[in-house]
Image (cartoon, rainbow, N blue to C red; front, side, top):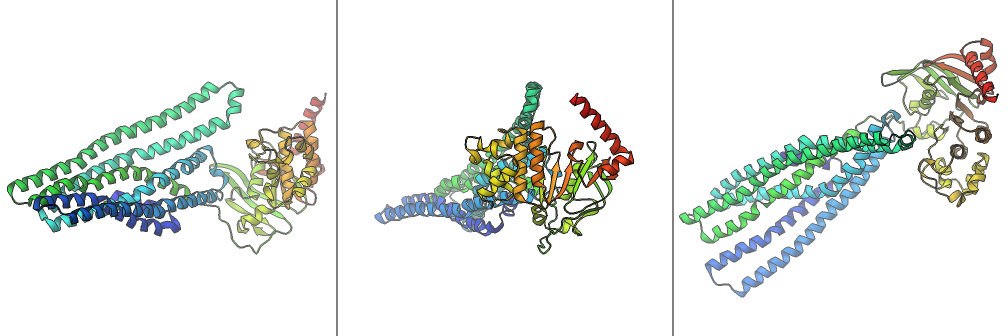
Length: 581
């Protein structure tokens, strides 16, 4: 019983402002359960009257009134309970989904591995759905059943202490059966829920990698991996069924046996003559319903045990520390001067940046170059606070970015990634994504500047055409130009280009370079690029190696140094020349 109470309180703990309504629903559930017992009380009355005297019309009117009233009141109390608990429960768990989504948006990007995405998907689509669909109704049943059992104990002790003692002893046996059931559920449900999350991760990985899987003809191998996850989930579910099946059998015996024993005891006392015949028959009949709350509690225990595991997973996800966001809106970014002061950073145990000192002045063009893994993208990610620095600080206009509200920070930054993601939505909405108040004329103007208006108009529905998930219906160059149009429309002070022209064919590169020129007018520009042709006009080139800045200056200055930049530049020129020949 204590485990049931804990499970109920655990669910209530996440209901927020709807807690009072749900608790009031317990009263409705209790009254509804009392009405469910009315037919048995009427039967008790009929038996007693029939054994003592002849039936009269007043008995008929009394029985009819009691039955009709109980049916009406039971329906009324049930509707009241549903309104207070299930209806409010849907609102509460909708709020919890929104709260979880808002919470996840405030985590650093390191959280978004495929495994964690699987956990998130499992919590939102499975755990919370299970709680709101099943647990909400079972909470009221568990509470009203507990109250009914307590009421029955008090009533029986008042009527005949022998009945009270027998009932308590048999009740303890039945509750022990529930305890065994709950323990069996707990032994297995956490493992099963974890397997469901792993399966969700496996499905996401399988679908995301489908293009690569098909390209390398690895369908059978990858399918085998997914099948392994499915089999593990199946096995955990079967383990749950096997273990719980024994507990359910044990519970069913322990909850049915008290009814038989109650009949035996009352019958024995009646034969002895120490128990009134009318009351004895009434108690024999009512004994079948007096232990009904135990059966209901057993059913509730199964559901609430699963819900308990789901709640813990939800709370665990909500307990992940958020990136701190200052709510002081008095500071506004003006000039976009950026300064890295002794910044170091590591992804888990892998150190990526080491004691970085870097100044980027407003309205300048800064290029970050170096081999893959040298720390270029990490610098860009730290500026937009996808992660927070562990040592040192990053200043914008002299203010630590940790003290700048994220809304203010991100509203002044536009990023154009190498791997562009477009949403399954219209072309118009994808371009207006960073500026939802933009007019159609402003969106078209941004598209023209990004050199994508012509191919958009060639689409069947133009700006109203639906882009496939991830931009699957467009070429790489077209997706890139739409992302640049999005950045132009946002009109942010800082533009971050992360390998924006990598892997683009020469014709598209020409359009993209023209679009970028429109994008960066009077902006602070930071470019991450391997192609030296895209950074020749940079005001400053920062050459990184193994997380450290090894050279810094204009292209002419770095070539004059005859160092690492010069060697990589010469290598690039040699490759370009061989390609042209």
